[in-house]
Image (cartoon, rainbow, N blue to C red; front, side, top):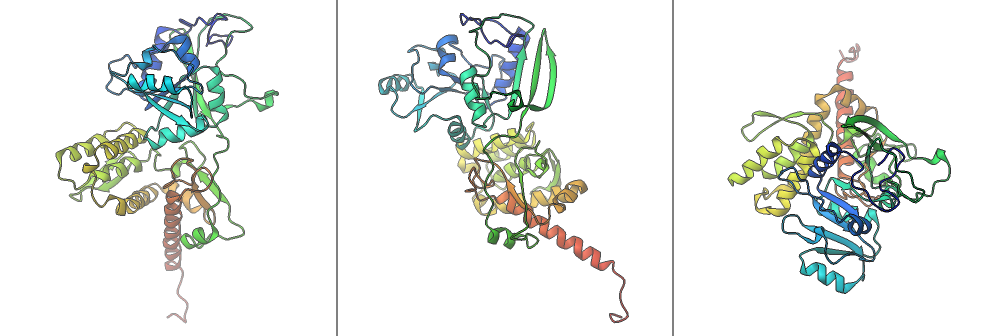
Length: 406
């Protein structure tokens, strides 16, 4: 955007606001994303390619959101020879145009109501963990209001364009007082050529809090939880107050490999994903494990592991579904016994219900409305109970013996 907060002139012309160095950074961000989202207005006005343009191997899926499919018949995004494109639309919209897109190889997905939250849920189910919304103000406002935006990157160029009707980066959010403004946290500032990149996290994400698990369930897992006095502790993203509880937190662990030799893994998630392919004789499975060891982040490890599991199920160990909970528990136990401050943090939550707050992961997380199984929360409460028992036993062993015991 320009210094006065415009993403185009009043005429709609926008080439170029930011510098070449800033645009190169955007290409790099695309290359680290699983998918890039734009709206129909961006397709009509800019006719983007949404490529990475840096020669990288990873090409993100291109997503277009359009309720009415009022889109041009010819567009760069309809060329799917190198990169696939998905068009998400309202159910029943322009069937003839849907057929045209299908004839070009573009995938069309219909939603009863085209809502950013439902779209993100759909993309998550397809294995996309990092999604870049590179859209105009109207769609950006809708995505922010829906609570699906976790991090913001704002490139500000030292230019002034003016114009009462010139578009801004974010459309109407329904706010009327400055006290309602959404504040970024963990803000970073970086100069890129003549531009400034301002980045930070949007917290809290609205309307993503799952409900409380049943009293019977939680008390059976951890007897320290009172039916009437227990509080609930949610954790989801690693920057949350209890984000260190996440399997995505960057706490390296050492776990034995097939030969019982200790191997260092960058996170619990790295180890968990790799275990899907342990013991499989296919050399490709072994190369998958090595690839996961080298993954640059837990998110990348998750993306790699899920992609291979989805595309090459023959490489997954046959007992995976029956052992994956135990695999996660062992890794969590290693993590919380390796780092004393994590151990103390977990023990300090005694009596509280722990809920992994992912709105989409219905196995490890609590789900959007509490419909999830919350297995990660359950395992942490089980581990907490075990650690509390060990702590209690240690304290008892230090007590002086009475004469009666003698």
